[in-house]
Every structure is written in structure tokens, then in C-alpha cells.
Image (cartoon, rainbow, N blue to C red; front, side, top):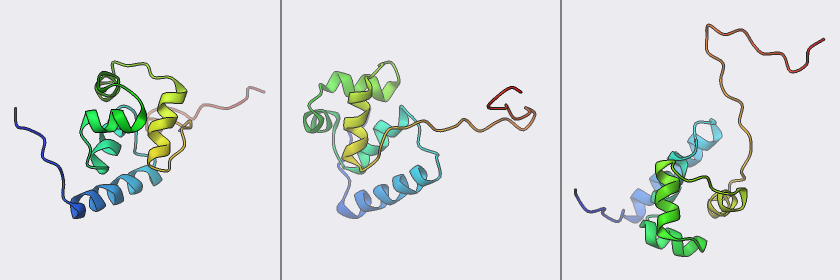
Length: 104
């Protein structure tokens, strides 16, 4: 497997712009968001973990989706990029009728 190459300043800037746009469009989802935020800062898992006060293993498990991070941990990752953790509604499938919020 090829070693990860640290991105240039220009690549980091571009990655941050792409990430911010995806967040605005609601297209940023866990666990891929953790990888994208880390890469947007041009950090290795070890560097990212140290910045957040976590272990490399915690970062690796979050990135693969095998972790069940606390809200506090997710908030640490989100705040690093200026995001907040919140609920995003799932887009309904085309063949599915809208679900009412309240039954009358």
C-alpha cells in the first residue's frame, strides 16, 4: 500500500473548500466526514488524534465506522472545522410517500 503523502497548502485549501460545500449541501456524513476533515487539515491519523486528545486507534475506528463515538468526541472533531453536530433528515426515496410528523 502506498504511503500517505502530505498535501500541499493549495491542496489543503481546495480540500477545505470542497468539504465546506459538501457540509452546506448536507452531503457530509459520518464516518467519511472524519476522514475528510482530517485530510482537509493535512494530518495523519496520529497528528489528528493528538490534536483532539484521542488515540490513533479511536480515529481509525471512527474512520472505518466501527467506533461508536460519544457526542463529546464527535463534537471535538466537528469544532475543529467550525461545524456543530446535529441531526440531518434522511432524504426520502422517490417511491416512498412523505412521513407525517404528527398523526391526526
